[in-house]
Length: 446
Ligand code: PFF
Ligand code: NA
Image 1 (cartoon, rainbow, N blue to C red):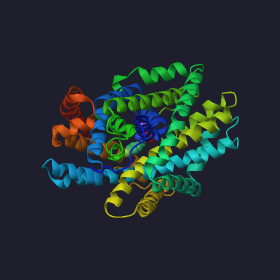
Image 2: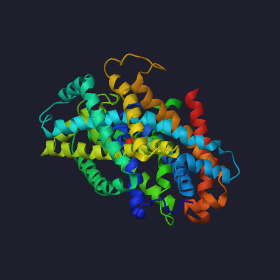
Image 3: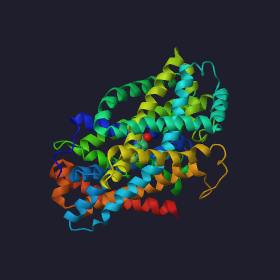
Image 4: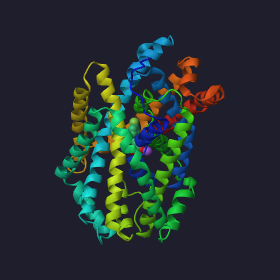
């Protein structure tokens, strides 16, 4: 074990860092639009079930591996595998994770760039008095303009890479400390306001009264993928953070706190967004633009709306920033493990992600009709397959490694929950999480 590795300064700092990775576009942008496309409550129900049965136990597995290895994901996996008498090829799982986050960060950066545009527009009063149609038309015009998308994407990626280059632990703790409570409070205000609007009842019904006829194996697959995505599990990104976790901290308690926070943020955002959707007679299955065309309308109804809207986009930006820093970490750590310096590794990752991200940028104009695979354009492809397929497959392998390959004393110690807690976790992973992931993957693919 490498005793000189830097550690998070406190238990709270670790929880905040993992929350920073978890809470992001997945909650506020992706959750509402995927839920809207997949029948509402039935999707929500499946997603929450998967968070509990798969997301949480696998999240513990992933962080536990990093904590036991105290190295970069690839090195931790290889080292622990050899120690356990298993094949060192397990380290390739770390590379698979790096590939997954490579694809995810490429579109994540582009969409986060949309928040920069909306932040600037809301500060300059661009949404004052705008109707839902006007906001929608403005958004469509923005998407069709590759220059503006490129600018925002580049800016966001630069912001991310600057923090990554400086080393994660230091840059992140402070930021997270002030950001999360504020974002939470603002969403509470927004959901509270939604309760006074006419769309509220329909929004609650849509979110909480499942329509069983909307169920399909594909909805299940998407709900599973989203559970992994929103918790930042399955790409070895949290494994990297686990390496910095203090020795005496209960992992189950820490991740349970994160999951509760993550799910509530998504619910609050969902309530706010769907209240506007139903009040305005919009289509819940509107797609990736859903959040961007509903929230400006929601805020416009509040006194001092332009100010609140600006604050919201600022906080959203900070939330996506901490998530994207986490997304970059496995790639940078992998390159560092191959002997590159931190700055050089960050630069390589930044340039590569920027390039792939350009395909997403152009997917809203010149490449919109280009069908790369499964009838999807580049943006649709990178925002669907990695979250819905790569993360669950990665999570599955992570779970197998932690619950079947790691020797009991090593896993027991790294979980930090005593023997009883360890047994319960292992039974859950071995007999529920792993089989369930396999079944959902298989049924979704067929
Ligand atoms: N959890 C982040 C979100 O909900 O926005 C996205 C994410 C971060 C996914 C890190 C995967 C990951 F490794
Ligand atoms: Na999330």
